[in-house]
Image (cartoon, rainbow, N blue to C red; front, side):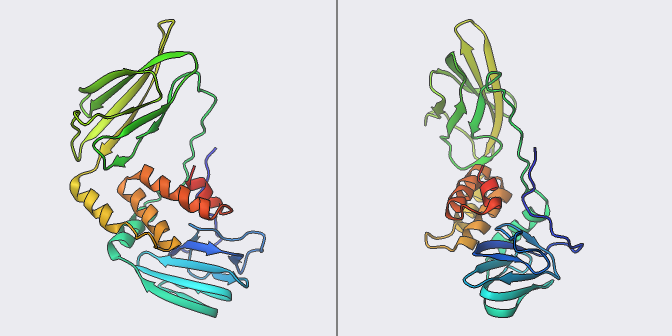
Length: 274
């Protein structure tokens, strides 16, 4: 089963903004209160948002690098270029153009969705690779993790470059292996890795994944965009989207999990953190 990240909104216009923080009861004026909005919801122009007493919402226009904060009780009009308070207080803040630009392109590409893969009951068929899988990393000494199989005697961990040449191969009994410092990975290079589950019967089952080490320029750019420790919730949402857009999916997921822990009732964050 696949999940859609953003709730469907009955409006033919293209979305222009996204909710990047939300507290309390907030809903569309043309929808019932029983269908409240959530963090990461898209907003097309022409919609009006109702904030009940005590509610707060942050609406981000990535194309304009602008963030709007509203407090309830209030009512907000979503316009093509800005969000306008029809009732209640409002604040406006400019965002870093590089971060918001990358986030905007990523959102427009349609990648910020939940293509939740249905994991069937196949744990007995092959190991499940956990990390790093389909992501960029910044470390040259990553920790490889996988979910093992019952009755496995040991595992054969094989690391290969993008041409299939073996970089390192080692047998381990645990479900993880840390890259030693004497094995040199290259910045900007792609790698594949395979785990073979070896059984006493002589049988073996395997799973294979891939990752890449980011180049120095990209790593420095990502570090420069990292929010400070006292950053707002909305800033951290934007940074998580930025990381996803740059391909650092596992680092982004760590932030999604932290954000979901802060907003445990938000369905979009909960799905993103899975």
